[in-house]
Image 1: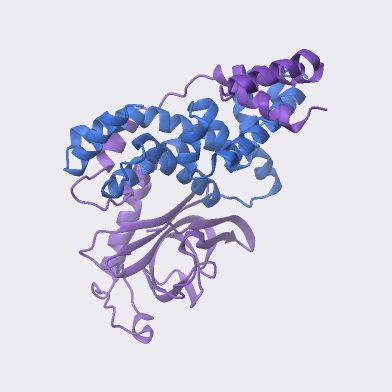
Image 2: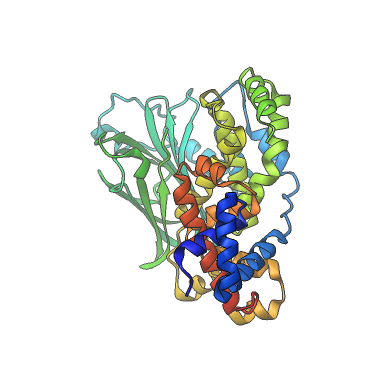
Length: 253
Length: 181
């Protein structure tokens, strides 16, 4: 058994952090202790092993993707490029679904902050406020054989929005729980009537199959809650079986 | 690490100079990608995190504190983003899937003969905060002071996490027969 202090000295020696006197002290210990020498040899082997690990090559085109995502003069920057790189066809599909939803909607509805919940309950169409650059506060993606979904929390001007895309080949339920954050549900819009939706101030649940997109308008509740530790809980399930559970961490602005 | 040149490039970026931005990205993208890869263990996630880290860094370039080094700042964003990524993707899946997500078993590791995979597999068993310290020290070659600056933790904490993480890695690699017991 080696003394903790000796273990620390050996570790610090490996990191070139010892003073001259500490090195002398360690050398004396090593001269006397077989177990200390053994520990030191093994630690050096670990260091050598990690040093031999080859650098991982960056994927082709990543530099261009990064450069293309950065705007220096028109900040803040939205993040759709990441989704786009993952799956162009799927994103194009979302676009088509949204366009179809817009055509089906009675007319484009422009959300007004003054509107009460009673009025917003009946809204259809995609109704993210326009003209404000979105600031991404958190996002989550899931992609399995039968389910593809993205959830992003954005601030657009004074509005806080949760944008949800759900594409499932099997009946799927998504439950979004805001209890772990200071956010409260103000209103929810949906693209079509095939998506069954229930809502309360702390939760939105949807169930359906196929491709859907909707927006949750949110209010900030208790401002005393530490914004660094906020999370929105997401649960995807199918026929009562949990498929995926995740937390969308709300980034500090 | 190119401290003064980086400062100049950051100032140029604040004025909207895309060439300066391109040079800063080129300077650190490989290192950031590799650090993210080692923390996340997945090339796609590492690419996402690298992109997000640079986007966020330049999105907030006006808030960059010149007292810190640019590389500390971008590493900090990347490591935090990597840890967030792990939390966001925390999965509760059926047992079979969970086992698959853990990677190969001990026998598979030994049989595969791929040392790189083995080291990464053992690395992935460490808790995120310990993994981040190991990655910054051993794969990004940062000093205690730099790690403390990147993670905003005291140097004392860096050392205790690093020594403890090394011990865990050493024990596991010894059990696997990769390091002598």
